[in-house]
Amino acid sequence: GEVGLNLEELDKACENVALMIQYIESYEGFVRHCCEEVERAREYREKETGKKEDNGGNEGPVLPKITQLGEVAMELSAVLGGGESALLLSTISSTLESPLSHSEYEDTGRAVCSNLVEDMFYATQRAALRAIASGHNTTMCVILNQCANTLSMVIPSVLGGKRIAKAVGVLLGTKTISAQAAEALAKEVNSNLNNLRSTFGSSLASPAGGGGARLTEEDRVAREIVRKEAGAAFNDYAVSVEYLGKLQEVLVDELIRAEIDFDLDSDTQLAAATRGFRVVAKQLVEDDAIHGSLLPAVGQIIKGIVEKASETCRYDIDESGFEICETVGSWIAHICMDVGRLVEEIVEWLGKEGRGKVWKYVMNETSKRIEIVLRKRRFSEFGSLRLDADVRLLVNWSKEKLGGAAGVGELEGLSRIKQISRLVGLIDLADLKNVVSAEGRNWKLKKGEIKGYLNLKDTWEADEE
Picture 1: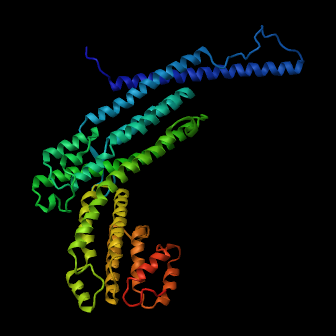
Picture 2: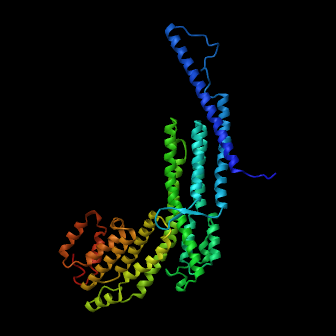
Picture 3: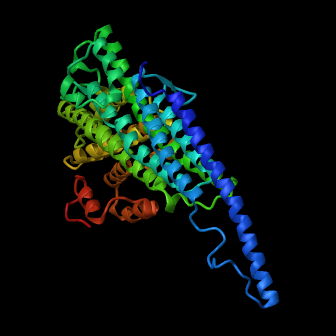
């Protein structure tokens, strides 16, 4: 007949072995309790009579520390460990062989996550709870450590943090991909493909994609598939970190309910795996996708706008120059529009937390690039007014994307630009102390930076303090 691994049969076998261990542990616990009572009664009689009872030459305990039945339980725990490991890996493998499917991640928006995360954690939790139900410490150590190893090694590989960087790279590439190629990407991405960006092109494009070329309907469909996959990959990490925390809570509650003296932190690697996975997730998602792909694209956009906006990117202007800027429009407005268009295409499928995280990175990068530009400018009175209007525009844009002023307060780069605007907007240097003290600990600019920015203004001498 056909030879293969039947997951349902394997699950039943693991259930039966765990049940056998549970019965052995319960029976041996009962016998050991009876023996302890016999020993306690013997000690009491010897104390009352003052005579040592004849133990038939057996000076040790009635029941040895390790019994033959206990040895059987330990052998079964090894069998169960192998079965649970095979079941976990087979469940993950069968999930990956199925077509990639998604489910809603949050009630609002288009955020999705792939079902493989839920399947993996369901199988892991089932194995862990089965081990705890056995009440056998060796079994719990074996199974829970196997669960920890599976989560720490398999999840980063299966989820493939590179999925996000690859998909983002496609979105930023100058070359478009066909709908057929995008369909293949959506199916193969779970196999952790190598360097998709080099396949479809790694050079950066404008937010419209294709180096400014008009996208066909096929191109739009292809990009939509990639965007969905990028969002699902990002959300998978957020869901996994959340599930890891919930898994530990469930196991701790089960140990308390069963009155089992077992420390997850010291007796297993589960807590260490959780901490390690958070580090890996941060590295793969934030370092590879955001810092490796998205932020360089933002930098390219800002560089291009600064090179083109020669008139509106100046602050050494008079009244007529100010009026020209009002008519033509601010270079900051162009940055907000173009960067916003780029990022919105990528974050549309992300959950709320993921969107906020990406936007904060992008806004800090945008603010940093703008500050670099401001360091090379000089400011007149009208230029100071122009900068104040630009900064207000940037702040309002940030509030809109982050959903309020609370998130804006966490942006150090934006805080620095606001403070630069206040410095060059000073009419009298005597007000400097009040401006700095009003911010208190929130003041970001150092003493040398303060002097450097004050020296950029044309209305006082560079050597004034």
